[in-house]
Length: 307
Image (tube, rainbow, N blue to C red; front, side, top):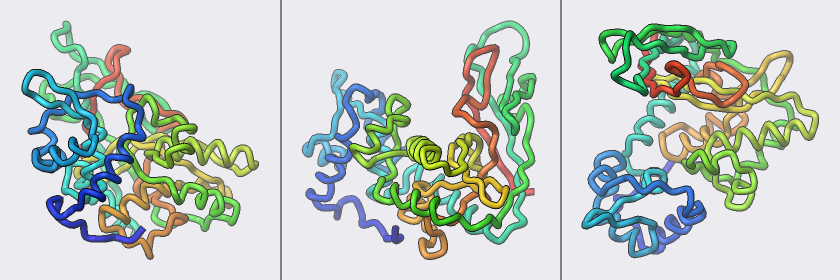
């Protein structure tokens, strides 16, 4: 996808907004969580009240609680991305694209700190965490007095060069070229029927599709879950890996396309078949929580620095 400069939201036509609302409405109403107030839509996603009013007039879902309008965070996140607004998620994507460009030159290893959040504050004794590390094992850690201090860290050695993907894998990647990147709630992000019907997916759905399709064709493939490693903060992520010359090559065509469209990644330098593996640290072969606190899933921040 080519990189284009997005017009100011005020200059976007009603037809363009209508098409975007139609995309949003492909997501079933039953999976929406209306908890995002107007002010948060503006501060987090740069979608102001005037733009919200235009979108509502075109059919954007919302609820009213008293005099307050509440929106779904996924809806507003997707609208902000597709309009090219400088939202929190677009800023993160720009950081990933920058790390991908710089990492393509090699030599940028990273250190990732694990800063979990207690899901049950007020209990006796220090917090006991188990955090996921490479190999799918969990490292036991004790919470710090400083809630912003890492309980442990992970040094990630990046690899910039990867084997070229064979023709059968390239043909498989072409099958998802028409899929549009869309942030989706957990209830439908893994639903391949939804992906095939709407042509909307996030990286989880596309990964599941690629793994299933490759296995049907006898192409060596594996599901990977781990970290997308980039300063200032890494994030949990999933992607597919294909075995080429005894090397597992990470592939994430949807994320590469999204970074080309919205984050300044040069599309001519980063085709769908070029591995973004310099960004990835594989932890395990299934989607799971990275931090657990006495059996409960814990929130997690992953501050990251170059070393």
